[in-house]
Image (cartoon, rainbow, N blue to C red; front, top):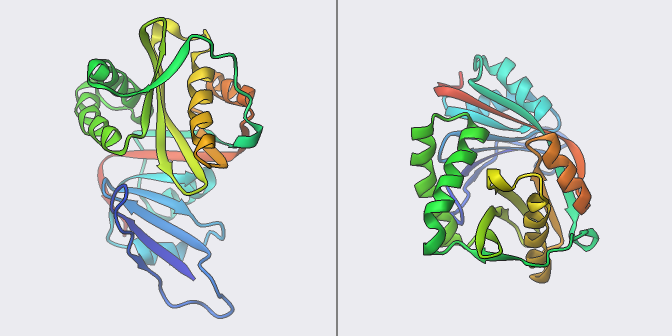
Length: 251
């Protein structure tokens, strides 16, 4: 059986359309989600791409996120053309009971308050430029609604040291027993000093105290992967991320 889930946004209902199950199947074996922004989310281990094509036919998309091999297969089968930005990043995960927290003396994680909003908006724009290959003006436009969403969800935190804001991190998704860590950014002047490890390490400590058992994240660089491994994260395959210029219609 195959499910098509329309992801309407954080906290919103997720209507599910499930085509007729094939003989011998008794449960959902794959999922394709489409976010409000037009990003396709893949989890189709069987690779039954003709079924996926039928589910997505006519859908307008601007990007694809999923296991790297599945993203590549989807691009080829659906004739989506070349991407303006494509990356393959280690998919890292950690059981929080095994988290190795570095010495965080003098460091503190705080909510995104009004006194640091301008700094966070600047960081978010810089982060979006790197992750999504956006022009600066588009990255700045994206930063404002992103910050509003983070504050409404209370999902992100700023790392402070010696009275200064030095880094940003947050939860992109929260499930009852698992969180996805994202929007990881360190002020350029402080990179290479262990802020990444402390910023990512302290946030799961808070999650663990709230009963969360597992954390996942994507490593955008070798330096980031080394920092995450030092905390106990282990790579489990690679995630692919692809963005197109403008919108594409799946045929």
